[in-house]
Amino acid sequence: MLILGIETSCDETAAAVVADGRRVLSSVVATQFEVHAQYGGVVPELAARRHLESILPVIQGALDQAGVSGPEIDGLAVTQGPGLIGALVIGMAVGKALALAWNRPLVGVHHLQAHILAAFLTENPPEFPFVALVVSGGHTNLYQVHDFQQMTLLGRSRDDAAGEAFDKVAKLLRLGYPGGVIIEKLAAQGNPEAFHLPRPRIPEEPLTFSFSGLKTAVAHQVTKNPEILTNLSVQADLAAGFQEAVVDSLVSRAFLALDSAKATRLVVSGGVAANGRLRQVLQDKAAADGIALFLPPLSLCTDNAAMVAAAGYYRLLAGERLDMSADVFSRG
Ligand code: KG4
Ligand code: ZN
Image (cartoon, rainbow, N blue to C red):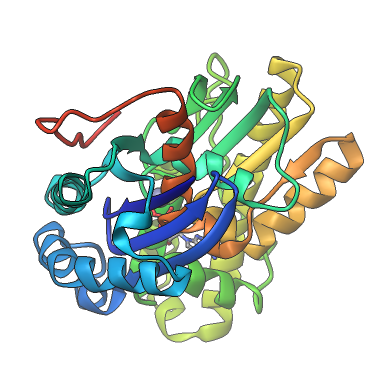
């Protein structure tokens, strides 16, 4: 069964063809970072316009790379939310139009579920149940995952998402956008012990994350000592200290969630899961604690449409269909 996935929730225009929810035949991602870089963050209006320009060539590229024609597709899956409304509606409109033109079923996919189900596009997919940590630009959520559709939220961030914190700190240090990759590179040359940054905990909510205090602590260091902005080695130390604090927060809560859910399998996905330091610490801790860790490759961690096609496959199998009047949603 061939599924065409379409993803336009934020600043990547993506399309992919996936066979049987498992084999990626093609995955095309058109990033827009050059559009948003000068503003230090995603500008929703510009994102929507760029999606409109890119979506049809990206879909054509995905079909061509997979070596299939449109009508050979058995079904379509489109990200319905959460995300930027103006961006989501472009993918939704195109998904509906193609479903009608080719007379094929269409399903709507939850973006965070898609991030989790990216783990099924790897050689060694997890068995249910497992705990999943989704760490992206918009979310830091912990779930207990029962099957392809049912997931219980165990914890989330009460303020900034982890990726958002990376982006904001990069902006504070005047490093550019998107922040995750830039901070990771700089942190590799820094000493994570040089600055002691907070690791906020909420005792009565042990699985709740909080990153805004960390961002404020970095801002405070910069205000106290503006030379940081011009001294690359101090900047690297601050980046390393920040990254270590985020990694600590993420890893400690993920393992606490495994404990409280009595689970032995952990999936970590979303853009921040591309971070090398996070992957290393997770691998070490999983090996020490006897936890089976599932980390999709980088291209499946950051936004892509293969994960949308995979998530859509199980919805189509379950008989779900999207009504032609269905709308997108921004939160949830
Ligand atoms: O999942 P994603 O591609 O899009 C959303 O759904 O938000 O995640 C994007 C986020 C951005 O905040 C970006 O800075 C962060 O993931 N990110 C990283 C890395 N690569 C991307 N954060 C830390 N280290 C990375 N290597
Ligand atoms: Zn995402």
